[in-house]
Length: 207
Length: 190
Image (tube, rainbow over the protein chains, first blue to last red):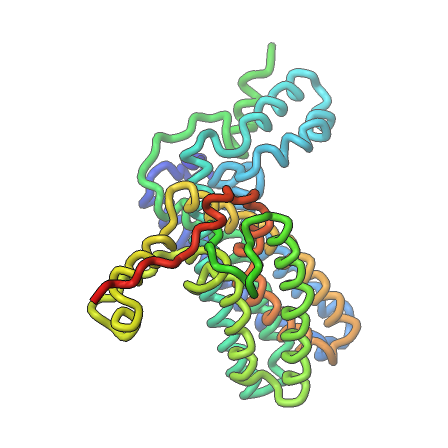
């Protein structure tokens, strides 16, 4: 489930994974801080003022791709095997060469939890993440209360930042839980994950 | 996973009954509370009353409360000493009730699976809500504050009630022997 390389960083050791996670959440914090500084409606006078806002939103929303789980090639393997098998045909069609199509098919068949243990680990991580979300939302609601008591005009901007934080948290918390708590594992050989997958495809192509 | 408690005298052993309860729950009290929240927010802004509005809802479904339709997700600790509840009901009875609400291995697994499903549902609805909020705030900026507050309120309700709803919706019909089981434990003979 874990142990892949992400952005060239080997994540098989827990200490490295934890540092990676700290960096990840600092990046989220930076994106949200930037987001809180851009003008939001009704302060926006021209559509071009939306561009930095949209770019930052896009950056923050795509950060969870690094952690995987819901996406191909992140630090954590796919949570859902079956859902992606449904898209198998489309993915195979995209890989036009037959040998690549075969590799894509094999990769997608390997997606999802490998055994009962991994399925249980995934579900437990979601349960924990749900509880954290619960407390985050409560703290958010209290913060909302305080902000609305201070100045109602701040609410649209605060609502946007809070909503983005919740979205990013929702896409990242289960994976963060898995990456933070799992002990050191054997490094996953090339052939899994985004970089490994590409290397695998290059290596296994018939000459 | 489902407690033997009855809702207004109706047993929830059958899945069909549970599904009706879940639908009724999401169609009657939830919209009612949302409307109450909206009216209160428009008149007075965000007040502590809004947080209080949330409290009674999840108590019905259980999970995070000991007396609902779903067993508590986290084990309830045994009372440290003879408390008011124990002296009224009897220590053995309290212990038996708490023991019957403890989750076994299979139920733990069902609980965690339900949280994952609820999480997935929230992910999609949350993303759709974020897009809707963006569009709305671009075209009707005056409604931004109300929509953000309403979204936060609905999110709290969903976080609190979705896993239990998933469990009530999906767990198959209970065994009749389990369904007829009650929490009537003989009181201590003094």
